[in-house]
Image (cartoon, rainbow, N blue to C red; front, side, top):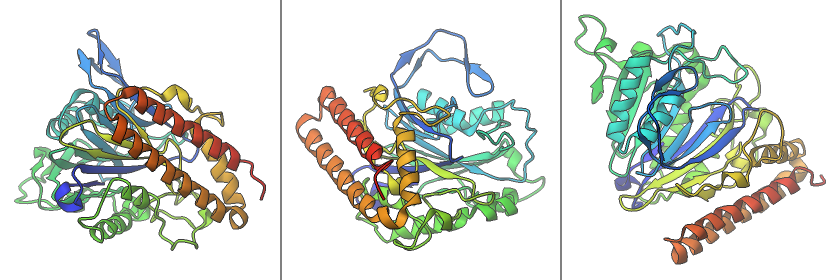
Length: 405
């Protein structure tokens, strides 16, 4: 989702996203520096594309084994998130194209503005297509993509179906959730998307796969987010989006993972019709002047997690250990063990866990405010803040992975 300042009342564009993936597909936070490159071919997830001379510094949240990313922000204040969409356009399943995550990372590394990134992703789509498996253990999971692309000045919604695409310029706010939404009103559309001899087209009705889209309940999640944002018009700050990313379809106090379904914003997998967990979350404020303010969980289930700040160009990834395919000592897997333990003993532990989690989140916010007020231009202080947060989080999740019920 993205919210513009004239709607939120905040001084910056606010971007937020959950990544919903397979439950054991750990998500890594990558902090990439600005880099120069020799001429050659860059290997993405399945295919190679020409390398460029220089790439921007970025913060990415990506499935640990994938080259591309689910969401990210670069040093220019460009933020992009993608969602899987299911369309009537057939996929050859030969892995000869780019994943949506590949396109997202390429755009963040190479483009400074939302408008340029939008045009670049369209160019990638038309050149290479998106015949690429997006699954982890599920190797038959193929899909097309929609994107929110934002910078401090403007934002776009780009929706795709095969090599077809349509673009809307965002007014006030926008949210996407596993469903094509662009109808007859769009800023741009690909020539091939228009049916032959048609005077107009409703992009979503033409290309949505009704069955898979309905099962995914993307429309319900979008409605929930729109209602939540609309009710807070003029009073939204980046930290408010921690809450919406944690929402379930059941009232607070009645939710349990066993009762989850695809209407939840914070997803908990239950089986074949609800196969995904939220495996990572990000919130970013994109000011006109200055570097983006970026918050991540580095863990699954935002309803059970603490958001902490990371800073573009300041690599502290070694402090939390990049996760692997199996349970290890990384932040992601340490939190996963804690979440599972608390869920197993929900009646005995959940209330106390949530009280301590919220107290820790409040302390992180206070520490961030103090650091930015007194050391805003001091990279060493910012690195120290992120490292301290990670140490506290590792201790918190380690404790709750085995606390007595």
